[in-house]
Length: 323
Image (cartoon, rainbow, N blue to C red):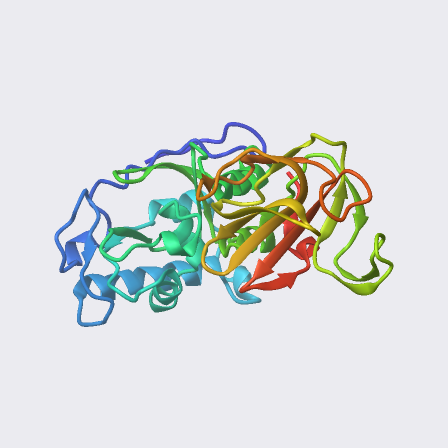
């Protein structure tokens, strides 16, 4: 195996075919599927799991050298870690989520999620084969599809960050491997479904979340969202992927709609001029869903935007990010 640099700070041009037999595969008790040694049970009675844990512990020691340890051993490159990377396969059982697997395997859930292209914890399905990497790190695919992958790629690919390009056998693909890397706070929030995009591309913030005097009635109370001023007819986009669960017209919200995001979160879009989606439609992050208006209790064209967690209004400013 060989690698070469293609310029300062560039990705290492290195191709590792992980569908071939790996170090550690011969000791696995499972039958290799697609070249990946199989773990049948997550306990020390399974030979494959014992070997996997040994690989993980070895890579963690190499990656996370304690203070003072660097004087005793040379710094290893991403290429060094890629050459010793082992990928195993495991079929999750009923009741095993990504957080359980992360704790049991001593691998960050960011590594499991990125390698298996899971953009949300609920995408992990019992009975569906899962790839388990023997090293902490991020695996960013060459073809960025989901919003999470685009977020990961924008922060790292083509930046002054070294990685190793891996060609992983089916059902993998080509990935940029960043040994030891983890989700940033924004990426973690997005994966946990608490990261949402601003619903307008251009706006002026006219009212924040919190106690305020209502500009129409003069009463003081909790303003449960953000008011984003924009010209009438401005496009309104979904803040995240989900399902349109409610469309209606209200004396206060005017023409509005609600999108449910997973089990715990929902977003509300009020004072719309018109709606550009339908009830029970599945929408993606940044799907066009409506137009800014001034319907309901409004002093001018703007979008009233709310985020609700388990039915309780939360400050959107803490969870929104701008592209």
